[in-house]
Length: 501
Ligand code: NG6
Ligand code: CA
Image 1 (tube, rainbow, N blue to C red):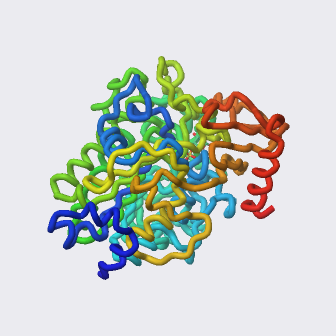
Image 2: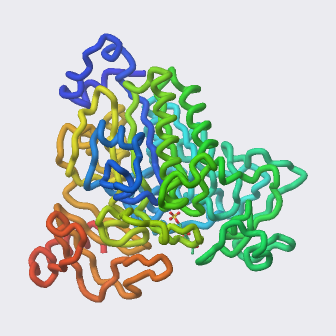
Image 3: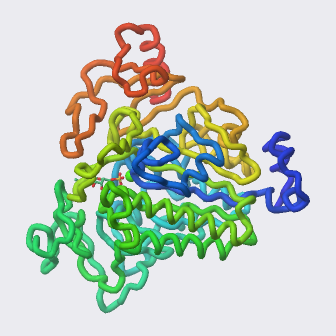
């Protein structure tokens, strides 16, 4: 491994931090990188981002001990597009990325540059543990054979994952392209089109339900929970929802231990607090907020355990941790888990407007923090940054050349050395887009419902242009489109140019 580029590229300020002999001679050169990515965690869901009804001490340790971004964005307000962007460094609307079913084909081109491929080029061992949701196979997956292409074909040496979401079949773990613990005598069939014979669903066997659906989620019942899609067989391979968190944690710890003597990149894609929210019994009832709060506490504990492993292995000072979420919060996302009823004074959006699925800011603005013990000085940064920027930024960190267009090199902001980030960003929500520039956000007119009544979220549609100053009006209550026509025009022109329309 060539160690020199790091020193030239990262610059003097970081180098000055490398005082000890140990750091100067090895570990610090290519830090391990761990991307901790939650699912549907809102801007206000952490005590370090203002929550008072939930305490998340382990995540807070990262947020308060590193750079806490207050203008950090996922590319999108739903999962698949955000995950596409964070892994490819490309705007997801260029690919028309949308929430995928459990049988959708892989949407990342295997020739496409990705974050794990770039890091592999830089000498990293790369691992995925957790939620994938970027599609698998080429359109005709046999779940009983090798499932390819998938994460291993887009840059992960080692990948242990669920295909889509916890609420979608197949409800099995996949270990490097093969369903884990599959008994060939009990093969798996998955269908999103028609029901499978003799498979209990929420409609045919409501008495088998331990969690009731409110919207959708009417199909095959697994562990008492009705899912989206139909699945038969695979009895020995089916996951247990209650120990999914422990399972992914153990896999992550094993990956760290297996690669502790070489630079590694771990994408730890946690499932909380996406539905169905099923905490391990150790966490059930631990928050006052019902399962949604309980699984956030569970995720926080897992992150604490991961940190312990890094400390025990003496890796913490040589590991850059990046914490974020794929999109904003939702309470009722289709199951009766009392998220609305038990909310009390908790504000998952942290005062932003909208939520998951929304072009308003709670859709894509999420907690985002970087932590590197001894290297990053604690600070709160206003820099506008997007998860999509990790590709270009980390390429500079590890000294790998990579051609990017949408992904911007914001390494200095990510390391807290500057509070200057992007000038502008296009955000996406259910295939609609909006444009942020400086403190301003412009949402073009979109027809359709303003309120997604199923989830009770305002999604940003209006028949006229919307223009908000997020610094003065974080809750997006004052539409200034009419009073700021020149700004509106300038932003619209810039937006159209990026969108290429
Ligand atoms: C929606 C599901 C929701 C969730 C979401 C994907 C229904 C009614 N709603 O279609 O429960 O699964 O898709 O969430 O089925 S995401 O975080 O993966 O984007
Ligand atoms: Ca999500």
